[in-house]
Amino acid sequence: MERSGIICGGTICIDVNKVIDRFPPQEHVARILEEMPDCGGPGLNMAIDLARLGAPFPIEVIGIVGDDAYGRIALDTCRELGIGAGRIAVVPGGRTSYTDVMIVAEGGRRTFFHQEGVNAQLSTGHFDLAGSTAKIFHVGSPGVHARMDAPQGNGNGFSEVLARARATGHRTNLELVGVAGERLRDLALPCLPLLDSIIINESEATALTGVETHRDGRPDWALVEAAAAALIRMGVSGLAVVHFPEGVVAADRDGRLWRQGAAWVPPERIKSTNGAGDALASGVMLGLHEGWPVEKGLRLGVCVAALSLGSYSTSRAIPSAEECFAYGEKAGFRPTS
Image 1 (tube, one colour):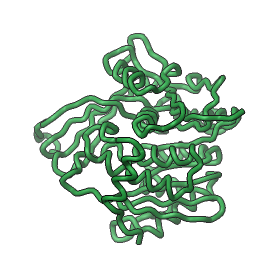
Image 2: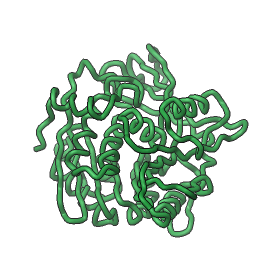
Image 3: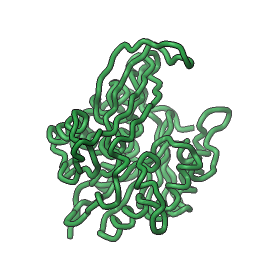
């Protein structure tokens, strides 16, 4: 059977992006300058980003929402972008998960306040892959789903659904979110041997591998490569991708390493870094699905991430893949050493 498409499972939430004049100390006040709700969560973000890139294959989402206004935003967005939403469960009377994203106007730095909502009810039973002919199963994120995070079988709910996806012929990919390092390690380690690929940031890579990726307070290319290589040794069977503000590295089972510098972005064009990691991952995933050389997928990834910085939304600034590549060629890239 010839497979095509990506199923994006796991976290569906609404990001309530609030632009503030400053991040205040406790018991002080900051002014909200602008506010906008938009789709979020690594499961949904990946699907939306792939659709905006013009991915030439089917895209579906597995997850859970409430029958409320935020749930309708997620479902309507999928419908508008041609994303399959038939595997999204709608909980009567439930509250869709949301995150208040506090974005400091100058510099776009983010702080997150998360309401788990019906994501607490997400379980392995929602991940019915029967009849799926998708090529890749992408899932995120351990640490924010009470039932999925709970011990099960030989790991947790995430390792269970990854094993199920493998058994039904899917390639597998995992994405993470910023939960406490030891907790992240406990949840993600059982998943690594069940992955064809993983796309995470340098802090998450350090939490999983114990390899310190920073030198003198900044990510170091060689150290980030060492962390990516460690992920392969820990079980990832295909490609380990680790991104950081200056760029992205990858390592594979054959010992090969790749580096790609970030695309240049003028500081005045940066509105928010919210969703930049998901944006980068979507470019890499499109390349993995299409069988591109690794370096081409990494380059698309950094171009998508760069353009995503131009909006407070996680995805609204993302154009087609062709436009992303053209932006990178015009803007140039950071050095890789």
